[in-house]
Length: 226
Image (tube, rainbow, N blue to C red):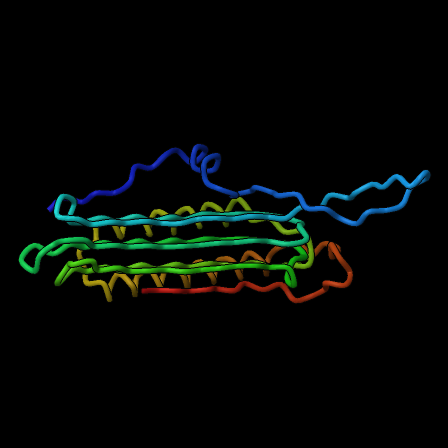
């Protein structure tokens, strides 16, 4: 039984190619009147993050695995659009030779002063298509860090997140049951949450970006499995 996994690019390449890792969109701000009826427009930044993992097992590649572990530090923006998705599909294998397809996507998004302007979606889908006895699992884990003041992940935190990313990748070699894989993914997600909470607790408290948004820093996990 062979394992087929999508090729990985370098970290720099992944950052450049992945849609919106630190991308910003522009939107019209408030028009202000000037002499002779002229107007000027302020431009506001909107952070966008989009990540997905796709795995597809077929009789030709009966074991497929894909994972994504993305970190988006969007900084001070007036709004954030974050989308995270995992899709696993098993197609056309038989009961005697079943398929196994696993897709896991971990998305970390940090924002400053955007608690009331967050549009986040986190979805997963596992599909057995004429695949009796196949194992198919999709898990999407989205971690939203919101603070009223300027915040960046420390080098130490990023290094430790890198360790968790490698451990997520090690699930490719696992032939344990889907329930066990699900439990290991959940355990890794809990470690990510604890690490992010610890990073927030130890971060220096600067002035709030917007005095009207002096809310308590939070780490929110959105989990969807199928």
